[in-house]
Length: 444
Image 1 (cartoon, one colour):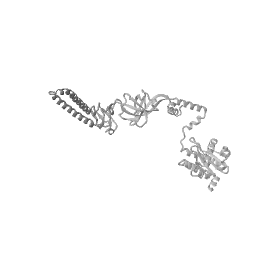
Image 2 (tube, rainbow, N blue to C red):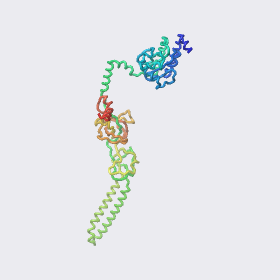
Image 3 (cartoon, rainbow, N blue to C red):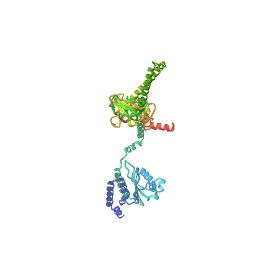
Image 4 (cartoon, rainbow, N blue to C red):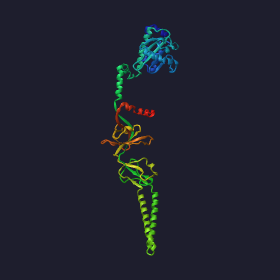
């Protein structure tokens, strides 16, 4: 207090104290340090009993004598609307009393604050802010001037840590009638701006005209001779079916044929002496031919248990080990053989987005391996009915033909497809899904 009286009584001492505080405020390393100096160490320049710093963004940031203000404290809850009222009513530094506040706030002034207060705005373009100093006696003109100068330093120091909003410079213009009309017209123009409606869908590169390799007969897969993405030639072995059952049946049929042949030979020799044997010759010959036909059929089936490639190409197959020992029926698909350069795009559009995809629409595929080199295609077909995908979701299958002259992506490549639809206003493109959700939920 002795230093304070000496500096207040000596104009030079007050100037030195002001310059020292300004230097410390401007060299502060954070907004919290600036606030602490402004509400606590200013006491050496101008004596006061209570001080607080407030900003529109952070509320009451600092109170004299407190290390960290408690946001839910009754004093701060009362002080917050007081600061907002003063920020609107006093753009310049001014002395304030309870008479300057609304009755609801003025009633509690004597409970929380000394009778004489000084409001010092420290706001900038980035925010509204202010300092409030209070003491028991009226403020001298020199004290008001010193605190106003200090407020300018605090404003400059806080501005270093704040980024002004780019929209704040437009606020004065929007307050005029012409500015509001321009804003409304601009919003209408932007809302009606035509854009191309599009949907995104997971997609991959699939064979365009594959050859399906099916099981030639009922059986069990015994061995797979190829691996996924292997290149095969026409006639190369792909997989074998288990031959145990057919081999056993063939042995039995051959033995039955041998027995029928022996009986036929015996009766044919006996017919020379026995007239009854002549009638049995034709029957036994028919039985012998029946057993021979059965043996030949089983042999042909046994010859088909090894399945070969119908054409040259690339094998399209899941994990081969999943097929070993699996029973298959006649005509069941086991794998595909496709031309590696004859590819197209398969995409899966969700049920909500399927209406945007139509045959003839433009499709752009962004591959995961080459996102900067999009692949262009044209939608060829869109499935009428949604199908279940491996992940459990329902989606519509879309097939798209690659454009002529475009680079053919490798078989199996995956990515995200963008399917372009009709030209629609921007407002419809933005609110189509929310509107659909509201109608499905509320029924109108």
